[in-house]
Length: 259
Image (cartoon, rainbow, N blue to C red):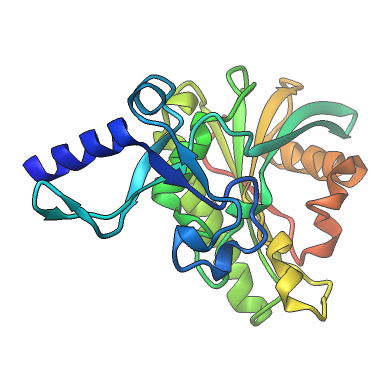
């Protein structure tokens, strides 16, 4: 414990290093922050403690007080724009609902073949930090966790993988302070991306992390009708550049509890 305290003080006073910011295109190639052309140097105590722009996540090798420490690595997790939003409206049976779709920026896509990890680390660690930056969701009356999978793998396996991703997002959403007042929960399994792309390097866009808030709905709407209204809204929206539901194998919408 004294060693950790000494390290934290050292990083706070003498500064830290950030890297792979603003969706660095070479992120997956980096074995060390010094390899990243976008790395930055952060100044010490004042910025680290008063602006809360991140958390220390990695320690490399060097020397301080006789302990081997070389560099304090600092990855920004706060006060960065990581969500893209669009309000959409749909209807079914002459009943209307309004939704807010939030998509995490591309660097936080699901890690291929994983249901508990995104490209920057464990979802149980990263998603709560991302939710801290979720804005304009304070008035939602319901939340939808979305699961999807890319074209790799068999249809059966990837539908199951998408389901597990939606389950894991739902679990974290229910535990987060920003969603404590939400009573109506839903899950949407989009299944596997079914429009094959030859360049598999580009399939990461098929594995976006997506959360949908329900802003308004007719009081007489049941859970199935909410799902149909959402499907209608997504098919009419401009989100097709990032989440084209017609390109996925499923639209399996289900309420998680009675309204």
